[in-house]
Amino acid sequence: MLSTILTKSFSKDTALLILRVITGTVLIHHGYEKLANIENFADAFVRPLHLPFPIFLSYIAAFSEIGGSWLLIIGLATRFGALAIVGTISVAIYHALVTAGFNIFLLELLLLYFSSATSIALTGPGNFSLDEVIIRILKSEDEEEIISSTRSKSFKEVEIKEDTSEGGLFQFLQENLFSDISS
Image (cartoon, rainbow, N blue to C red; front, side, top):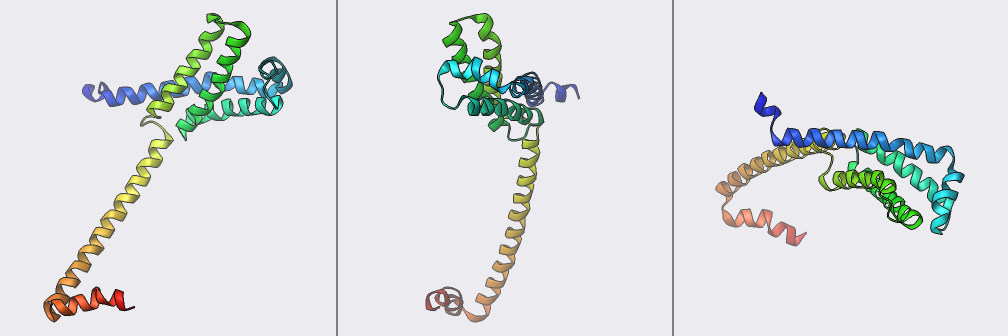
């Protein structure tokens, strides 16, 4: 049992679960703060960058943080959620560099969010996620289809063998191959 707990796979999946949940949980409030006063956020962060449609982009930033955080927390479409966060945090890092220069106290939290979301986007959600549950369900359905198609093929092969033994090779070719050409 101890060897099971200490295996690399279990440790990696547990680490990814912790990283996803903590990153999503601490980042989600930033999106809700943006929504609470979207005009103030647009004035403070989007307009200084001279980006077009500051209110619209502010909503995009808020919803990508909220939606991306929820996707990380529950482990559904995890890479998509992580990429949404990476995009928003990249703009935030750019804003921090343009407005305050290389201020490590301002950048450190942004860089931690960026590195966490990038790590999740690159490695995936791990086994403890809804993404993995969906993949396992789809794989089991594919395996069932493969098994059933293999069984039906073997029954067809038995029928073909029976046909060839009764009528000969020429009759088999005429019924199976030449019938496709003539019709």
